[in-house]
Amino acid sequence: MKNIDKFKNDLALLIEKGDKLNISMKYECFPVEIEKQIKTHIKDEKKTKEYITKLLPFNKEYQSWYSESLVLIKQLLPDRLSDFVRLFEKPRTRKEIEYGNYVMEDYLQGLRVTSGYGERKVGPDAALNQFDQQLNILKSIERRFESSLFDIQQLVQADLLDSELDAAKELNKNKFPRGAGAIAGVVLEKHLTQVLLNHNLKITKKHPNISDLNDSLKTSGVYETATWRKIQHLGDLRNLCDHNKLKEPSKEDVDELITGVEAITKTIF
Image (cartoon, rainbow, N blue to C red; front, side):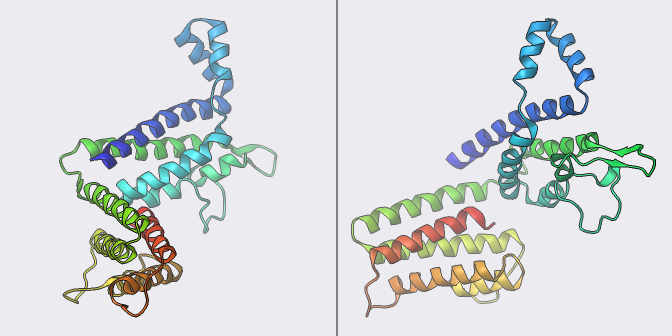
């Protein structure tokens, strides 16, 4: 169950950092008011100043927080991924910037909108609510861990696949490339089958191979042509290990197969 522990630990660190960024962002928008609140809580002017100097630089730290949170949400709460991204990216159809459509990307650029008379219409503080929503989406993952409805099957499977790939690496290291490649191929098949299930997709063939699974996922729009080609190549390497008795797969061939499968299992869900 090591993946579950890892996810919980990563989540706890991201939530802790998110809470700190939330304070930093509010201080950037309303320094006088937030300093008063901090001083009221700490009740010491010197310690208040020290606390403020240690606030995270929002623009510098937010990008890494966003990227890491994106990966975790994609894995554990995929139905909220588009909401999380929407709060960051500028809407393509946006014609006028208002409080309701001001996003984190605008905040990072320090975007301010004024009227024709120079009056302030929208400023960075419009993004405070957007970041709150992003942080709440991230925090909602905690409730999924606690809920009996949370399906841990994929996390358990991820542990098993990692173990099988470790075994493949060891076999290849000890000059058993065919066996190593065969194991890596099985891992790829298992993972692609799980991805189909994740997207409620079915395949009519009774015993689909890597190519069948790959074609189905591309046709259904789960990923694009570049990923499809990469998986097809991995399938060819697997076939070299499983079926081609005229040519012996090299250690480099199998290293490429194992590395490629490992990347697919960590990025395609």
